[in-house]
Image (cartoon, rainbow, N blue to C red; front, side, top):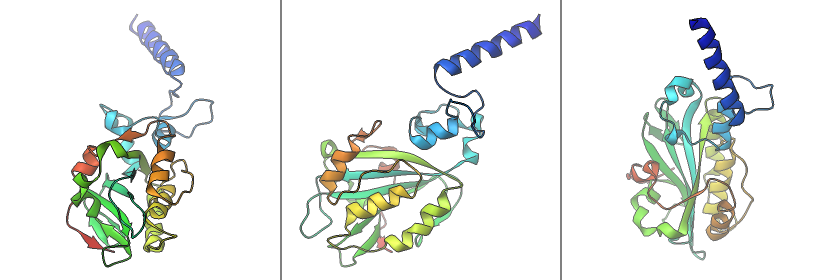
Length: 224
């Protein structure tokens, strides 16, 4: 009798997962028409922060960090263009170095390029220190999970992104850094306002500056 009900339970769960368009085989290479949980996390269709029991599915074996791309039409990091764009990184696995900044497990930092702070390149945590200067209603962001097999690509790209110019400004940095996470690409634009408008075209974007990764980011500022 127990075996009969166990088989019935498995069948019901499989049907529900199929209806939800989630592969029953979670975290395994997918050869079916349904996306795996890992694929849904990478694509951003599932937000890890909304998962109640992520360890049940061994997500920690895959997720090295979460990265958010922000764009705001308020504030300014340049000499002639209003607004700013940046990224927020939260380390999920162990202590890791991003550029020349060591981030311990569970902590987060912000990174952005600035052209009006005396160093034309990547700065750490200026955005978190100046967080309240960005208008919540004029700021949008996307978040993605960077898997273990992608994190080296992301970190290795940072040295080549350590520069700022009028044609390679904060927006260019944020888009290029985001593209190294394996997340869906965002159209190439040159101003924070244009990036903000493009982010708003992506399903799952959020508005504001209250995300915990940003709120809790370190505020000790230094440049690359």
